Length: 307
Image (spheres, rainbow, N blue to C red):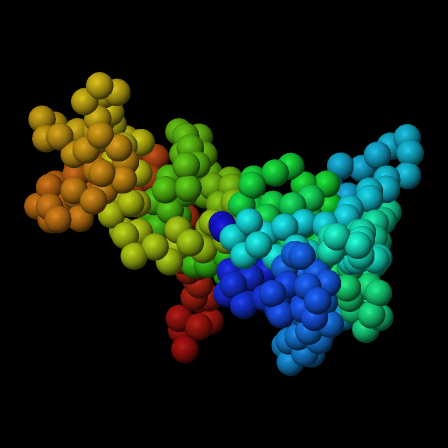
């Protein structure tokens, strides 16, 4: 999954700044971010999106024997030429004297406070902060990460929903469907595997990685992929590392993705593979039989028979 940058590319390209060419007497010699306008926009956007004004910063690598503290000054966006930092004063030649931004372990920023808001407007464009545009651009090793309570809460809610959906789907898998989907997940179905064991293994996958589980379930090519996984696990489809996957003497493709793409357009071959796989699948047939709903027969009493 691609990570979202802390500042979108659109926002970067339209970032508010002081133009040195328009400054009286050319006081500033650099393109400096206009923190007043940026802070106002950040607050307005978070309020409109019902986001909290609290942002937490935490170290990526915890220092065990001393209190972590980092001193950051400024950063420059190479694509826009805008400098991000807090200016303490200006030298006579028009260059800035930067204030140091001290970040200790687990610092909390309250964006309703002007000082904290200015710090956040700068840090989210600093290459030392994970997922800032410059950190992602330079692929640098960050020292700080942002822990936004609102974002983390949404992640937890979404994760819970994904797990719930995945668990409900596991309950729908019985017999051959259970075996087929388990094999697509890469779960080994052995000669002594019971339906309960297999159900538990699939449930574990659903719980531990619900997002991946649901993605496989919703995959538009799921039927072909399940058939491929079953056929390969049963030896109907074979793999030669120099020639790729093949069925009998028919080459299917060098990779699994290529073989599946080929089979999607070869209905007759797909049917033949499925028929042979079903014939050879003794474990699947056994589990399917053991997993069938039990019928309860009610014996009539002699009294009932007489009536």
